[in-house]
Every structure is written in structure tokens, then in C-alpha cells.
Image (cartoon, rainbow over all chains, first blue to last red; front, top):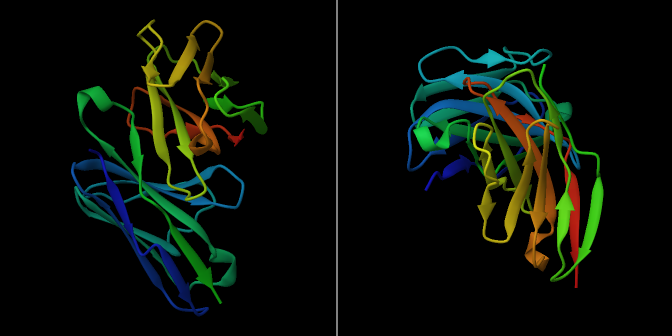
Length: 118
Length: 114
């Protein structure tokens, strides 16, 4: 159980276009979802936290107007990279947390999306 | 602020041998949760083991076990009978009892050698 899917797995786009990444919890309801960015050989860098039905909380230094997050339901969150530029090229990972008492604190991760901006 | 420190950037172990990965953390909380995650070359983050701070018994999951020393704020991972498929980046992570995000260490890259 506790499977998180993420689509697309890879995307290549031209500079100036927008890209949407979807994150779904397949077999549980995710009260909270998280979005991370990971550079090669580094740890995960938290971008934002989103709770269903409310606005996302962004980490310091993350532009909210550039990285739009929508958590429309308990199983779906989306990250839209607006007006993407080459420096936005990275590996993006979503994560979801269930509310089950025996899983308090546990985060389950999607397989990630590799974004390349030309 | 909570911090997680993994002091071993890279480690290697022979197949079938045992290896221990170190992790220390800093918090003023009394109730919290600790995790080890594995990230193989596919880059999928996989939960390896979870420990509740209020439980004194060390968590185990098959070949994976932890040595949780609450007073020392230490949470090491032991991998027994290492397999080639254990080759991955291992991240230690912490979260308090609230609904806050995991705090990750910088990771330890483990290579299992045949």
C-alpha cells in the first residue's frame, strides 16, 4: 500500500513554456503533499507543502508565482513550472502523507519527474 | 531548528557482509519519528524503516535494523547480509509529532561490491 504516482516521468520543453506535473496518491488519502527538487548527488530540497483545499506554504527562496501548486483533492496535487528556463531543469519529486495512526509522520514518494528546459 | 547529520558521504561493503550507516540528529522535542529512506539509481525514494521515539525497542525490517539511542540522539542503520540491490543512496530523516515535512540528512552513498 501507500503508492504515489507522478506524471510525466520525463519532460523536455522550450524556454518560456509552462509545464505541469501531477502527483497522485493511489491507495490512500493524502492530507498533506510535499514537493521537492533534487540536484545530482544531493539531498532533497523542500520547495513547498500543500494541504488539500488550502494554499501551499513555500520555502524561503522558492518563487510562488513561478512554481504554482494546486492541491485540489485528497489524492491529487499539481506543480506547474511557469515560464520555464534552463535553470529550472532538475529532478522534481512529490511526496504524500497519509493520516493513518500507525503511519504518523511517514511520507511516501512518487518516482520523480526529470524536467529539461532547452 | 531540527537538523540531521550523516557523517559518512560514501561507504562500501562486500556482498553478504554487514554494514552500519550513521545518523545523528538534533531536536528539543520529546516525541518524534525517525526514518531511513533508500534511493537506488532509479531515484525512487523507498521507505526502509521507521522508528517512533517513544518506543525503546529498535525497529527491524528483515535484513535492516536500527540502533536508536535517544539520549545520544543517534539513529544508525544496520544492513545485514548485504546484497547488490542494496546499492543506493541512504537518507536519514526526522519529523516531529506535528504535520511538518521530513528533515533529511545529506545522505550516504552505499556501494555493495560483489
